[in-house]
Length: 324
Image 1 (cartoon, helix red, strand yellow):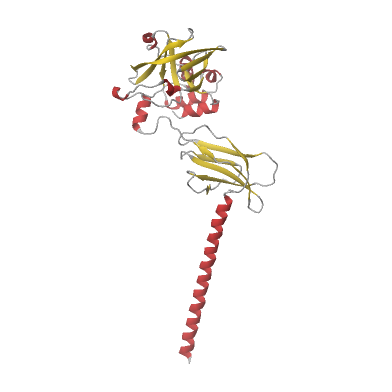
Image 2 (image 1 turned 90 degrees about the vertical axis):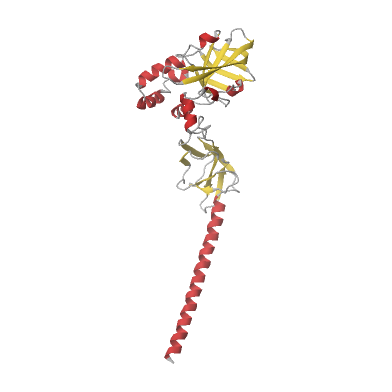
């Protein structure tokens, strides 16, 4: 009788073990289902959009620091935050690990990345959320070797193409006032770290280069407007070809030239753009030369008034300059 009893007991224990395993698997599956629901719930899709996200830059360069703050314009005791991101509207929102306060920090690596903030109540239910914001990465001149070479002034003649004045459409501000105010000192200190001049020498060099009394330029539909000493003058310009210049260091640049065809007699007969690009592309900043003698203007290489989009503040200008 002993062996049959032992055999029966073994079968019974095996059944118990199988039942326990099944119960464990069912519990794990239930937990997974709960986590999926929890993750979906955490996205806050049904929560009202009452959060504003502050600190979003117009654009970033690869590797820039993203620093955001979620602002709620009402008093609340809740302090449980989650931040979510997705690469496009076709993707699912994913919680960003380690971001559990109203402040968000990350490195800019994905162009078009969407980010939103959700604040939870004490029952871990979404209370309010923000509308998604989009991270735009624009490295202007690219990271490939050819783009870097062109930006530094090394290219073949047959690579140069004609450009329309619309490449410079926009509202532009001179950076000269920012230099005078000391806002660009960080840029000169950065240049001195790897350059052949001191920060003060770089500042002196750029003071001569940036100097101008035309604080703002607006370009639209071939019409160029100068804002100078509280006066406004405009003129219509037509394309007059380009010139390739060779500098003392051996690198080269291209001047894209436009001639006055209609407008104020106080506007220069010629304006010449140089923005480190050599074919059609929307410009992100440029150096501008102007005067009434086309050939004489090509000899000017020490004073190059420089313009960036007017929406940039001092911090935005510094960030953009440090990226080049």
